[in-house]
View 1 (cartoon, one colour):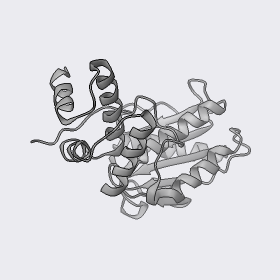
View 2 (cartoon, one colour):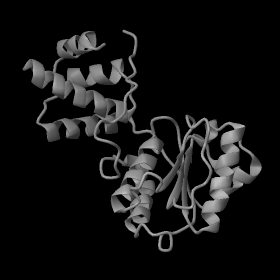
View 3 (tube, rainbow, N blue to C red):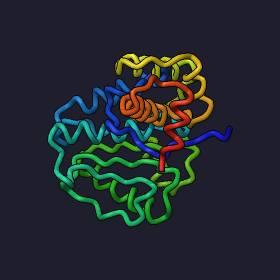
Length: 233
């Protein structure tokens, strides 16, 4: 059977508390300490942080989790946090109201995005504002303009790893137990071989299965998963 990928995000939203760190505990602890400071630019460390790792290692989850944590602390106005990713085709000008700058998928930035990212970085640093960025490669391997590449790498740098299959199974099992849902080994095998192995997609799949099972008043089995996919638009 062709492997399916779910192009959907976590319905509950990424948070630092629902990030399963595994081998990435150092990066998680660093960010927990960073966002744990008061959301004032005068108290948060302005030293930039750069996260790098392959797809599925949790980079975007962590950046969005930091954004949510800052919003909960008071940077919740619409312009409180500067955010740019590869889909930001026309980046806005730097806003002095931003408490931090978050740059995701920097390895994919166009020349225009790189110019804006450099401008954001310089302005944030001049105002002692934090910068958190993420990309697929370590700073030395980024194919970016040199002034941006070197700035991304001069602060805290954390490499992230994708969870192995055993860890993904453990996360799924704990998440299912928390919902009061039983996942047999056969169902787990099916989920891990027929769908995207990205942990975020697996968590969303579990949530969808739980809802579908409750609605149809059936246990989660392989036939139920197939029926849900057939019913999906």
